[in-house]
Length: 454
Image (tube, rainbow, N blue to C red; front, side, top):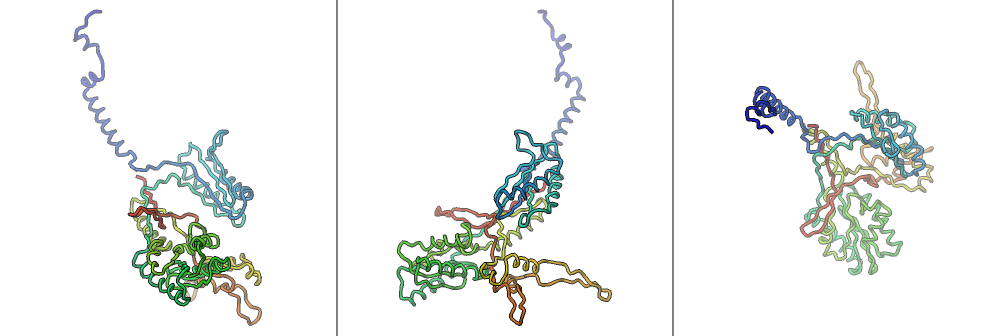
């Protein structure tokens, strides 16, 4: 191989380094372009901790309580599937895929999933079209619905804030314990018995009234006497508490029996008390240990209504921030007005539950009265009669008398009981452990804060 000197190598060799040295202007231009490209990419790159990821899946949920799955499939699920199928952007279903439209039908519930085609860039527009088609369904059976369409699976909360109720304070418990102890001692002094007796006490906030808890307490006392589980039952009543004091046989766990009675006849296992805002029953054997027993079984300090109002204030305050897109709340327990009635009593007056529902809805419907022209002045007519207090519901006239007899009021047929949704659909609890290693669970509401894009 012939030897090549350096001049020959320099003259015949071409590489990137030589090009940059010989063409400095081009090299500087390329360097400046790369720097500008890097700056532009850094400025435009996504900076969200939880970036928005487009999700092309949505679900339509339609309840029909008390109906078996076969009827729900025929009369609810299929109309929803037909309405969704009218959209032309549905993902085509293949032989080995679950894409497109698929449904799950349960007793009392229809769930229909829909997935858009991967070629669709604007999924919000297509979901809005599907939502309009679902809202146009007007042939659902009576009692079915409303259809709830959820298409926000891609939204990610940037911050979650939980508002929990603490346990009742020691000062408030001490004041209540003093009154409860006096009530128990008065009953036992009258009987002259201090042994083999148990006091079962339920504490509740005074804002909920006494009708709900007294009604359940009396039913529990009747059940215990009829079943022979307790004898010599005496009622305990006071400010913010009700209970019973009874003699029980050895080995009878009165608190466990009361909890089972409440679950079977009043509510669910979620609320082991006579009212969602009330404490679970507290068993007191010795009046001198009343305060210690209450501290060991202390209930939450704030009611569901107070948590709802406070979290609503926090939500509306956070929504005013410029970087917040929206705020959602989880664990809110809606308030209800419950009507407790006897079917036999309604039948004796020839009244059906559906008639009562119709009368209440006709009275409590917000309607416009329009306006009238009076000598050139427009006067707005505001119809009255809307219920503003639960006590007004009982004053509703159900039947007018044919003679001079008194009319039949709703309070003569039912018990109007303010309360909450039962059973609850979604509750939220905050679980924590104290210094002694014991776990506690408090009612809570969680706020999910969603940030604006960018």
